[in-house]
Length: 138
Picture 1 (cartoon, rainbow, N blue to C red):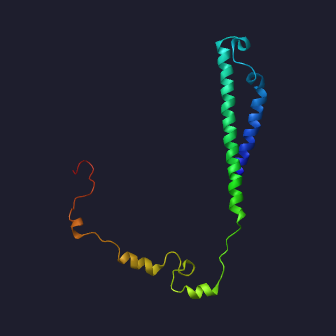
Picture 2 (cartoon, rainbow, N blue to C red):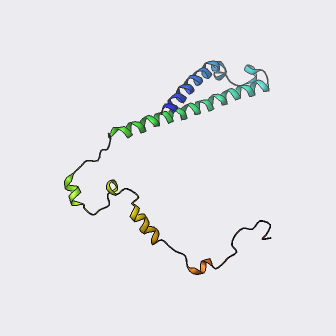
């Protein structure tokens, strides 16, 4: 949110300066009366294209900053979750998995799971030459 805020401020300042510097160009038609020749008309069109793309950049950066603000407000509007200690629930739900007491990785459960893990069939290991040999096996 801080980064998008800084970028939005930079975009607003630069877009304001661009608008101020090119205001006379943007307010006139791109024709030979105002610009003299084909090169001048092309430059006029390039300034107007630059202004249009800068406006799109400003709008997208401003939208990202507004989205950051909306998401942050929704994130903090409900407060902080705190697990309550209710003895009735603890007594009622005995025998269930409790990650606070048992931890996510129980050492005995891991050993049991590894002991009963899948073992491939014996025929799977009958090929003895399945390694890579550089130079086509020489």
